[in-house]
Length: 473
Image 1 (cartoon, rainbow, N blue to C red):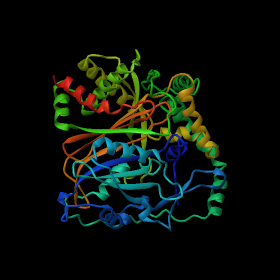
Image 2: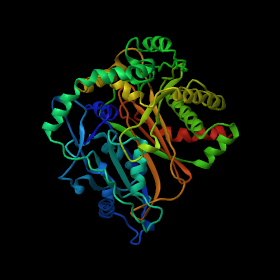
Image 3: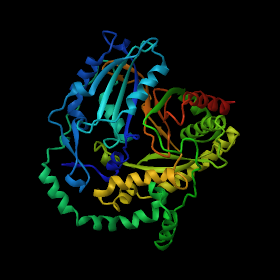
Image 4: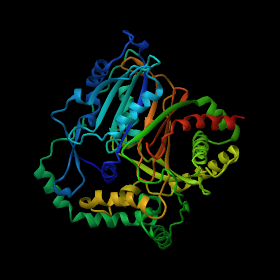
């Protein structure tokens, strides 16, 4: 049986009629590399049928434990229907980028059906460029960034002709546990909850200020005092996120925008200033967000606080799917006008964040969740999200994530992958997400925002590019 971890379950718990817990990717394909020069949903479904034995999570369905006594399980869906999951739509003319982005926003605003495996795929025709788009949508409870890249690696090829496939995963089946069996297993596990919490105590409490529970009154004080008692000397963050227009409760609707930067140009800037590619990405995002805040008369005097996901997946955990991440905090220096000074300060801040990360236990997020019994886990998670918008300051203002990818051409069902724009999650108190993925010499930006809080999100794409130009000058 495959049971969700507390961290996997957290992404289910965050869902409300306004919040969704799935992530996605918008792949732009050039069908001219195929023999027939076209690609449609039938061709993509043929590929999926061929690769499904290598992709067990695509057949896993969620099964809740009776009375919510334990975290849910994945079970094999004996009635799996590929035609339900893979769909085809077309844009009206002229098929512009903004029309495509609006369609993506509408699709991503809808929750996934929990009675089926938690993923969907859309083949989108009618693009003005003549290319074809493929939008994937999969729940964060199934994958994180690294395991999502593993799935894409199994779907994509190095040549249009495809490749010889590896052997199917031997332990990929989730099984079909009975309701009575899950209930009995959960009841037997109830006495172990306090033991599990006690084992997590030494790691979790001194570091609770680095988790979403930092919004709880007194969390920072408890963390510091416990750290002193246990002799912890880790560097601590004193970041306090100011409130902005995208720090309130989000609506059910989304905005999406996407664009590209030349990776070589980003690396030139990186080399001139002696920083990292990630430093440049975070800094130019800060420049763009600063302009948006000034435009809306909402620029705080203090820096914003960005949530930056960091993978803690080890080589032994490759192919296990689920979530192995740490959510780190870093200042986004929107208070700095000069672009060079902003980049230099960003470099220092990111170095501080890396030092804090090295001092934290890899399983911190799961350890903290062990203090909440599974039966009330969803309610407790919802309370922390509400606190982020109802009292004091939010934990984070926005997400910025930079995912390195392969620097060579890839092909999906014979069609060349031209770009792969990420489409990620926003939550109450954190209504803006900027995720970038590098691929084949460029950086593909995907920006998700709340439709009501940020109706003009496309300007951020232009301003990210202009912020890079400022550093080049």
